[in-house]
Length: 352
Image 1 (spheres, rainbow, N blue to C red):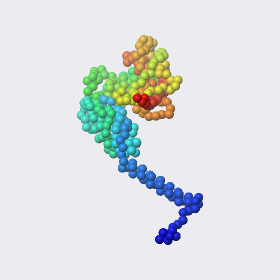
Image 2: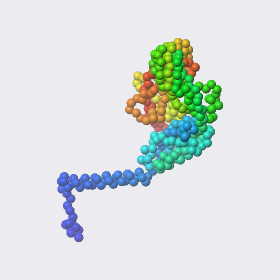
Image 3: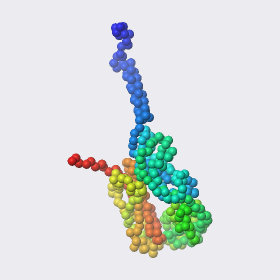
Image 4: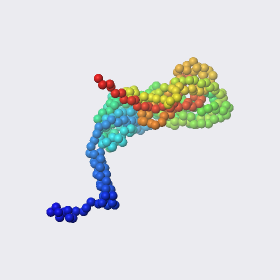
């Protein structure tokens, strides 16, 4: 019987012939297809546990009636279980949570982070099981916004004396958190339209520009947020240079987790953490600032996105704050500080 089968069996193609190459290609294609199917099957049917970082954005709706007074942008480290592909795609996601859908106005302490995340639609659609969260508890302060119509606006230009001021509109609506209304809404309240200097304005000539309004307290909103101001500068201001240290502000979560044990802040080689700033103001105000120069605060804001590996240096915008009672301001932009967050090398314990 075996002799008869051997008689009809097709001999293998001659090596390096066209048929030999075609047969090899056919085999490779089938191997690739089967391998792909195995990996797809494994991704669908096999799950894993892994830690990932997301940003929880806490915003109340409708925005003109409700507000969150507690920190609203929180970095959360989750331990989840699910499909590998989904977990890999989910890292770094921004998740939105509206506390007004389930909480009454007021301060809610120790709200369970896992309960919040598990109820979010993005998490349930992804099919992820949330095992743990850090921070595991959150304080959420939800408040109603009260509308105070027709609050008068006043021009504030701390770097010069002005005349002939005309504002459009002259009154705006103030939205103020109900719990703070008694402290903010008082007789004589004025909303400041503060002119930000962009160089010396001409003396004696009318100037028209859009001016942003200054909210009178935390959590307050203004409608509209800017007015059109026309005014004339009647007296020019002086300038003075100050050398100030540049500090950093960090996300709230970095002080509670192990971010600083895993990362360190580096400045670009040749960079310094000081800046020479040019300040404008009247001679009297500049002299006052000279005696209180240690109260000048210059800083850059570090963000969660800074923790992602980068091949270049990040330009940090330098913000400057002066003593609130002095009428001074920056006369020129401050050069950025180039920096990056670098992962620390892992230390290995010496064998005992």
